[in-house]
Image (cartoon, rainbow, N blue to C red; front, side, top):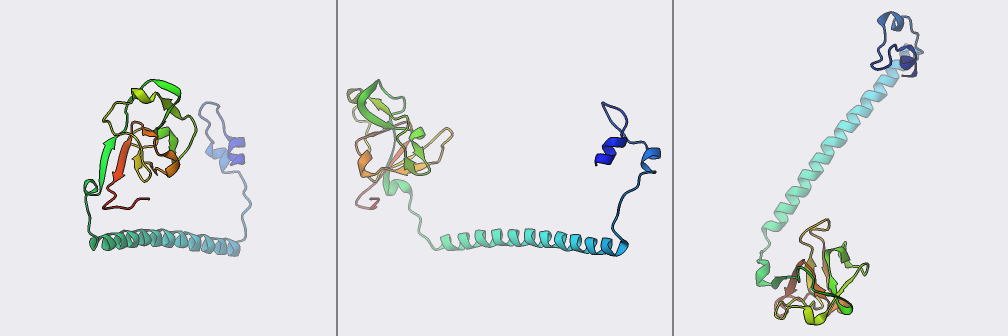
Length: 178
């Protein structure tokens, strides 16, 4: 490569003249070693191809196993096991001493983090909205960069309110989420 650059002509679109290239000399291993190197490269190429085929077969096997394992399961719609509601949506007036709002930005990989917690005035939370969180509730992020992330509410976050996200409250008589 370095030699090709050295013998190229032109600056914007460099090319190599055949007349110059045909006089270049390259060091090559003896023919016997070339044959051995070629054998090694072909064997490595064949191994890569086999690994690709094996990977595809493993993926298909996993997919088949999953499909077969769920065939015997009984599926129950979520709404029969839990009450599903939306959180506050647009948060009311901020209050540094108010109630904590658990927002999408406070949920990371299944856990609630305390960075940038928003607190709102308790009296500004709409009555009957049912956004107060209980131990065992599950928050599902429904938009933005964290869409699909979830977190279960532990005892120490009881009384906080859900932000813009979905709140899934298991029906305690049917599901024990604690």
